[in-house]
Image (tube, rainbow, N blue to C red; front, side, top):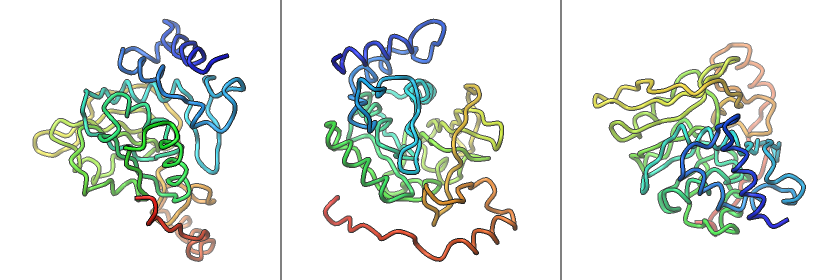
Length: 253
């Protein structure tokens, strides 16, 4: 079956009144346009357009319904400047690029080989204008701030202060908050710069935001527990510098 037909079927299912994950026309159109099979490392007929998530090289490829929930919560306007924390395979960035233009989408990830793959996938799918860089997501991307919208595809106890500060006044940050019981929350920056919860969108289950120095496939990946003494001691014992060779990024500007 043609990928375009599979995409239409996927979105129609997500729009169905019993699910209601897709509620707005911009999200619907973008999901119908982006070739998901360019980002999911399986054949289209074998599940690239099924509503399921996949583990891939230490990261999680989100199910289409989860992507739809995140984008509906983010509520972007045309030409908004957007930052995604957690580049993954680049699929969410591509869908946002359809909505706001690829030059307005920025993504960061703490794991270099994931950044490399996201760049490759976005280029192959026609979204080469999306900026993807290797960063600690909690620090954001200050040189490109402020952003109208920030989407965090990892969980934290509280919204990282740096991300809130990189929002425009009344800008929106969407992030899973909590430890064992996570809730998807939209936080807006007030005129005074404070973070104020604007909306809640139900329960979710995301991996924790990584600590600087960790890789997505390391044993320890829980930012929410980084102040725990036992965690710190175990982390010090198991990590001895970088476990992977650094990639020369000069050719990937």
